[in-house]
Length: 459
Image (cartoon, rainbow, N blue to C red; front, side, top):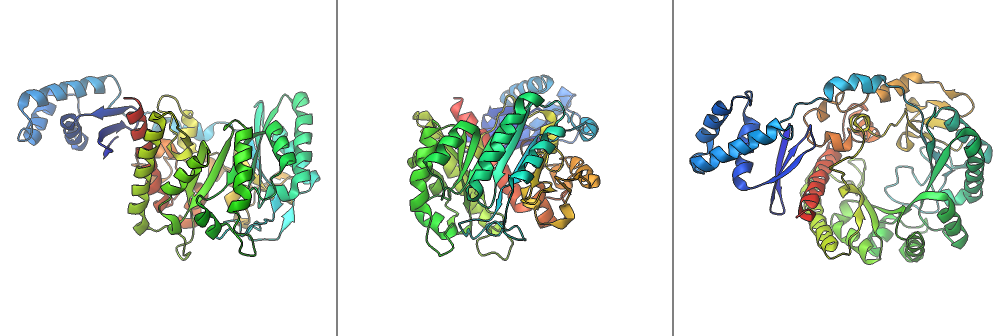
C-alpha cells in the first residue's frame, strides 16, 4: 500500500507497510501515481515502462520517464516502496501472545471542582455517584498490578478523576505504599497525575516533582476559550487562577515530563491559535485534542467542520516548522511521529492495550477496560477484591486490532494509530471493532502533517 499527498509544497509518498517516506519531484510523483493504480505485478520492467509511457508521455518526455521508472524500480527492489504486508500473517501471534497488566488508571476521585461542559465523566461522576477512593482500595489495586504484571519491572499508575487533588492525601499514601513494595517485588512504579490545577500549590508541586514521572495539566487555550468550556460550577472562569500555577509547575520540571492538554470544540475550530497561545505562555510540551461528543451536543465536531480543522492542522504544522528552525521549538503530541523506530509491531497492530494490559479502577475498586468505559456496566470486568472475572471481555479486547477492524484494512494511518480508540468506536459504531469516522479523518490529517514536518526539518 502506497499513500501519496501534497502538503506545504512537498510531494510526499508513504510506503505504508515499510514505513518508508519519500519526497519526490512532480514527475516521480505522477509515475508513482500511475504505478499505484496499476493492478498487475511490478516485476516486469518493460511492461511497466510501456504502461507509464502510455499514461504520461503527453506530459513528460520519454527519457525522463524511463529514468524515473528505473529509479522507482530500484527503490522497490530495496524494499522501500510497494512493499507487501508482512504483518497480516503475524497478527495471529499478536493475538495469542501472553500479556500482563502493566498499567492502571486509578479513579482517585469521582468528583470535580470544575464543570467542564464537554466532560465525558459528567463532572467526575461517570454516570454514577460522587465518591473518593479509599487508601484500602488503592492498596488493593497496587497489589493487583504487582500480582498480574509477571516479570515486567516498570509499572504505570495514573491518578485520574474527576479531580485527583480533591483526594490528595490518599494519592500521597498510595504512592508511599507503592514505593514500599518496589524493592521486594523487583518493580518500579511510574506515577502520573492528571489535574485541572485548581488545588495545585507549593506542597503539591514539590511532591509531584519528586514522585511523578509525568503530569498532565488541563487548559483549553486562550482565556475566552478556556473559560467558556472549563468554568467553576458558579460559572466563573478558571484561566486566571490556574495559568500561573501551570507555568510555575512546567518551569520547575525544566519544561519536561509534563503535558499541557487542551480540548478543542466546534466553538474554537481555530485551535491552532490556542496552541500558539500555549507556546507564548512558555509551555514546551503541548497537546490539544478534538472533543468527542454526541451529534446533538452543540460543541461537537461534525463532518462539515473537517475542512476548517484540516486547515488549522496545516497552519499549526507550518508554525511548528518556523519555531523549530528559529531554535524556539516545542513538542506537539499529535505531530510526534518516530519514522525510524516507533512502537513495537505488536503495539502498532493492537493499540493501547485497554482491557488486557491497561485497566481503569473506580473509587470502589471495579475494573473497566479503560477510563472511558467506566460506568458502562456491560464492560465491568471485575473488582480489586475478586480480580478479573469477565475473561471473555479481555479476549474481545485482545482480539481487537487493525486486521479485525474492517475500516482499518485499507487505511494508510493504521500503523500509526493502531486502530484508534476502542471506546470511541463503541460509542459511535456500537462495537469496539468499528471506528469513529470523524476522528479517523482527523487522525489521517495529523499523520500527514507530522510526516511533512519531518520532511521540512530534514532539509
